Length: 389
Image 1 (cartoon, rainbow, N blue to C red):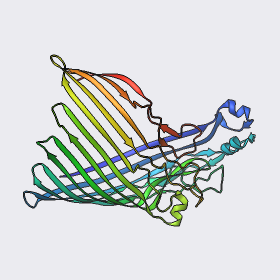
Image 2 (spheres, rainbow, N blue to C red; image 1 turned 180 degrees about the horizontal axis):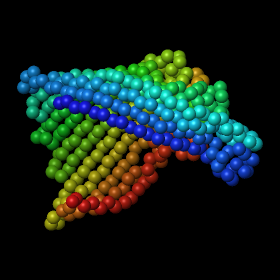
Image 3 (cartoon, rainbow, N blue to C red; image 1 turned 90 degrees about the vertical axis):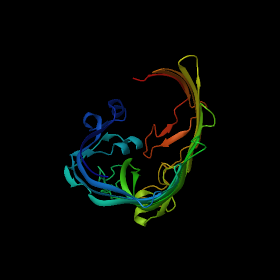
Image 4 (cartoon, one colour; image 1 turned 180 degrees about the vertical axis):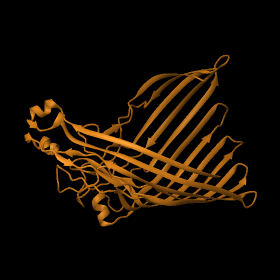
């Protein structure tokens, strides 16, 4: 197998941060055109060109080897538009009044961070029988560089806060994986099992300048992710299917320079934003209802473990715990469905989040006054009607 890929992307961004006329009047703040306290924008043009190929060689009738290679090139240009910023947040939060000065940001052109890299895969597959496949794979990968739209900007709230860096360079990883896929009991039992270890270098991460809530991308030295994954289904009797899928994962920072710790807020051993445990149990039963109709009833129980929303320390201030740092809730919820199928027409009654869990499933890393936390969708009842054309 061989192929090629080309992508050209042109993204135009124009942004304005605005207050309200009523608030400005009440607080006696003046000097803002159209109540706008910040204006920014950029035209980003990027390209990606890649070629790839994969070859499989059958060493025996049961053992095969596969090798793959991908070579890619990436680059672009960013034209930043002229804009301005103000000390609006400082005045608003501290109760100051008076005219706000507009601090101009000049137009500029910046060459996008470029990358030219190869990634590869090597795999051995062994099939001792028609119903069992085992494999071992080593593969590499990388992400293209990221440019920060506000690179070089200084906080107007706290000028001594860190300056937004130019961007984040490419990160690289090596993935080691072993697994098996099998069928037993005349196909009634199916399972996919895998174990993996990922060595991740120069990781691209998101950080947040806390004085003015500007997000930016940067790099952190090294991390490791190891875990297990499983998918199992069982059909013990006609019409009944039971199953589970789940994963165990341990992902954390393993190597970090002092400079990387300062700019990102990371610490050695910090967890990455992924749960240790997640999985689901499910069951579906299908049955005949009269002539030409089929009924079905299913239940799913899903569990997701807690995970952090970012790194624990305040970027730019080493050793200081970030007030925005937090963990999502560990939660479990139940979904139910029952319905009928009449030929091409189907009707389903459903109940989602039956226990009405209000668990926090996401915490935004920015200092928004409202809506930083997202919760699981509340208990929901409904009807779905479908038609298969």
